[in-house]
Image 1 (cartoon, helix red, strand yellow):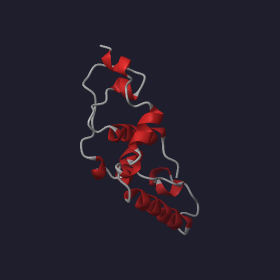
Image 2: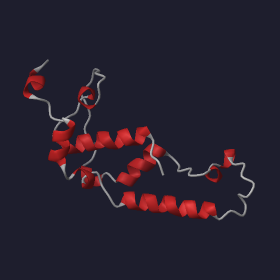
Image 3: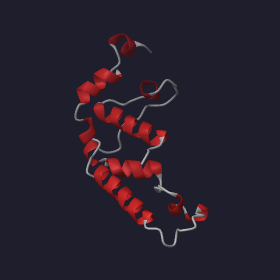
Length: 129
């Protein structure tokens, strides 16, 4: 199953916030576009954010094949096809794995994340108005 760019970015922003939970992150720190506002923080602790829930919320209903989208389904063998059962099981397994992990689990390496992705502002940037 391939995740959308929106889900990928959503997870990365959450990882960014979890890497420095004590700091408020402005849009300018997260992206190249700057705007007015006070920034964002996690609404709950990283150990309460389930990765599978984030993916479900950002991806919507998983449609791995045409038969999972009834309004657009035109498959001639849909009534007797067992592939649908197999694909449904695979999607269930995919989410079962993601549900075992929290945002805290995937950001245990906070210091490495911060150093590689330059999350911490340099002293000269931090002093800028």
